[in-house]
Length: 121
Image (cartoon, rainbow, N blue to C red):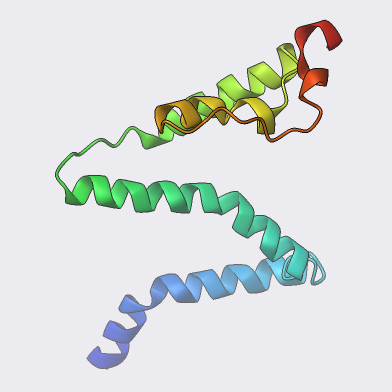
């Protein structure tokens, strides 16, 4: 009996996960487990996965800084503000600070960059 309790205790999170997937699959009539939805969920979670890998390295080298959630939120708010209020294209403008920090040349990936000039907005 103790062995089964230990097995249940060590795998309880997986049982809850499988139960939730089954509940959502039944409630959505199979749309939850469709390929497109799985890819969509993976894309949405990938940012936090990459950030958590980076935080693991930061913690391992004893440079403990757990403010990654607030930094991600700040960058999201700034980029959203720039896209809505300034009419800037996310793909052509938000990468430039990272390029300059890494010393990369400032090459514009957008072939229609003249359209992004403030006179054309």
